[in-house]
Image (cartoon, rainbow, N blue to C red; front, side, top):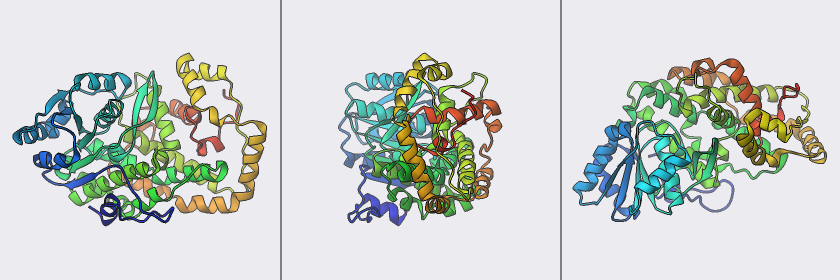
Length: 428
């Protein structure tokens, strides 16, 4: 465990945005070896109650679920075994199913990675029960976050959720995860520079609240993680630990802020739209694989934006409700229209933002450049783990991908580089 992580969990880390100390709702994080055998001792201080339910799917049962159940029952814990079907989807139906199947359980224990984590997290939140997670892959940063990515009526949303009381990541289990999932974890962690720049852009132009703390948390581990990314696929437990720490700290950074702003901006909007409008012909892909590709795209857009010597104009195109419905369909179009309402600026607001952009341009340009990493650095790290780096590597047609980049700004109220470089060609 890094000193910064230990200090954060102990409440000893100074808040770079204020005079106090940072605090997070997660009580305990363990990154080590042999954690399944210690499950009873690890969970005992977390007050999950006498009848926890252990939730997993067939893959995560084999990876760690059976061992966690055996350890709990061996210690006399009345643990319920709740096995989900293969490849569960993180949607409202799956959440309702877990709530129903764990009725009477006093707490929930997720054994899995992104999908299982999101389903159990939101099930625990909506049923007001404590929960913990044994992660089986270093594939995403949601283990320690306070939001769950859940699809509701076809619209993928980042919903507020209760933090896990404990997060347990066994290095040997993580290192045995499928190579794609390990590469996806790097993909999900590599968006720090694009997310930070987008959030700062919104702060400067719209006065959106901004915090430096999430990025301070990542400063120690990011350089070594990217430089030695190849070790993630060779069984190097040091590399796996750096990735696990980065993912944990990224999630805790979101917890510090009470939302996903520091780790989910334009790159995630594009990914979410691709997931909301899949083509049946596309092969199955992981969230972190999407983020690997979309981060490179957004990094290029941000670099081109910063490269302009004079201030660009802020001149967003008008889009009508009817056009939303035509683009997304009636149901999803209505949801996106409502979700993005805060970004339908009137002429006075557009003029104010444009004036701010012009007045702040020299400083803003330098600030955004300082947050960036060279595109070559990001690309080389992803290449080292054979992560996808182009839409074609995801099996997505270039035209479909370009449409997703163009339309992604319309699905939420988050203000990003996509709003500043919005399509003005009349393609709607």
